Amino acid sequence: MHELSIAIRITEIAAEAARRERMNRIDAVHVEIGELTGIVPDALDNAFRMAVKNTSMLANATLHMHVVSALAECKACHKTFDPVGFVTVCPACNASECNIIKGKELHILSLTAGRKPEEGFIKNQLKNQT
Amino acid sequence: MCDTCGCQENPIQHGENNALKSIDIAGDILQRNKQIAAGNKTYFDQSRVLTINLMGSPGCGKTTFITQTIEILSSETGIHVIEGDQFGSLDADRIKKTGVPVVQINTGNGCHLEAKDVEKAAKEFDLHPGDLLLIENVGNLVCPALFDLGEHLRVVMWSITEGEDKPLKYAPMFHSAHVCLINKADLLDHIPFHLEQALENLKKVNHALKVFFVSALRVDAGMKKWVGFLKQKMPV
Image (cartoon, rainbow over all chains, first blue to last red; front, side, top):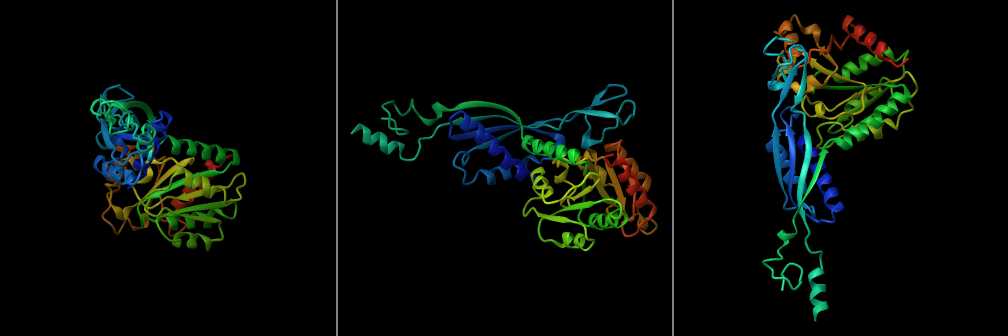
């Protein structure tokens, strides 16, 4: 369920960024999700679809997720390895003191935005031409 | 004439897609929560109030553990409690009976507390230097792992009736904690719980965890050790 609060926050950040660029329509949002964050990509995608419903800017936006594989480094022998399921025991020397180097990312990378005509804009343009 | 905005451009050349722009953000999705949590932490530091974020499954004994901690410690330390639940005030009602100030937060469809919830609730307490603030998070071993509240200690409670495999099944929670309370330890003689395996599982995901065995229903040696540990952590 925490995917919904993450999805809502993504829509808020995206909308703020688009407004700063004077854009009012977001077509795509690219995010980076680390394997160790506990975020389930399918659940985040569903939550994103719920979060964008009834928004003026993101109603047709799609979420593009880039999953970052986990990587840990042993503090003792410096071997890097995949800490599957957060198990941070070094496969080389069996030490359990390791640093997580990758896998905790939860970033919004970029978005694709555009401008849609404001309500009444086309009517006004036509009126001005006649 | 363009169908999009009414200009004189050819509509094929001036479709909406021509105005698309890629905007780089490179921002942390949890940044706002982290900022509020940092503000909470500063507030608790300046107030000299030790703050505990207590997490664990529904039914593992968190509220009983809090009432027992209050029972042991409230005569010498001011204690305040924030209760997080989806609905209702059952836990806050239990805390109220101890005479300790409590704020109930209902998260509705939310499955965890966020820093903004704690920021708002903490303002309702009359905090004094040397006080203790206990935050009982929503019963859940998944979602609260991701959200910093500005606490000094992240404490995960795990009861032996849940089995010894929990740290491996819910690794982000156990990895993110500073302290693990293994509760319902008085049932060890009655439940097939492999203690050595449980500790081995904990070490696999977080070698630095401080572990306490407690039976929150009574003032046992484990509860006394926990309270002694809390006293050591109190700001001087």
